[in-house]
Length: 312
Image 1 (cartoon, rainbow, N blue to C red):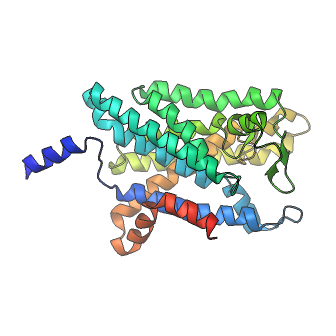
Image 2 (cartoon, rainbow, N blue to C red):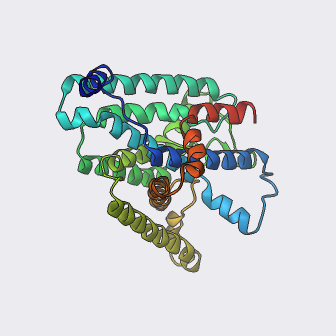
Image 3 (cartoon, rainbow, N blue to C red):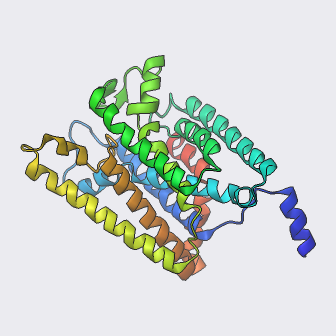
């Protein structure tokens, strides 16, 4: 049996076993994606819904995408763990090749999908994964500095350039999306999931993927830290209107996804990491009958992504 396992490892050096908590979190993200995208299509921009549920849905915008991207970053760290820990250069090259092939596929699939669904995220994933392929051997400190750099660099972009350029916010359509300049702007600055700062979520996921989420104590600390960070961000956001006239710059403290200012990045990261910690704990303590359907859903994300737009 050991010899067979070793042979399998040599044949499939990048293979990792399924992690129930990981799949469970992806399953939750799938249903969140359904909810938010159907809301995006079915709501009337000229007569937005009001009330508690409308406020909750507004707050949730972008957060399930954050969860998806962080989970993707975790998956990259899990896939490359053996090569990194053993400093196996040949295996690292193979891992990078796999990532770059995925990047090309997602980029091409996203571009083909874009005329049908302007809120597509796949072509963004293609760029994120190119960055990940370059960063797989970076230390956690280097990755964290990159995450903060992508987050903070959005501020001068937002202050210098017109973030609303190209948008018709009454219909949530982008006028010059298919022109070279418009596509570049949409991809890197003011699209649905622009590289600045959204690629930072993938990098954050790569950091979390190197940590031991199997440890209950670590999961508890991660969940508590996420709740504390989320509460702090939302408190700052709630206090903004009280001081808006005296300090106009406080508009930068918004936790909404549009535009993705730093407080949203922190708040969205905290909410996603809290869900991930709960998912890993839920997969451990709940019976399989409760978690298996969600976990199975999480294993078919790409299929659900295409189907919910094409069929839905």
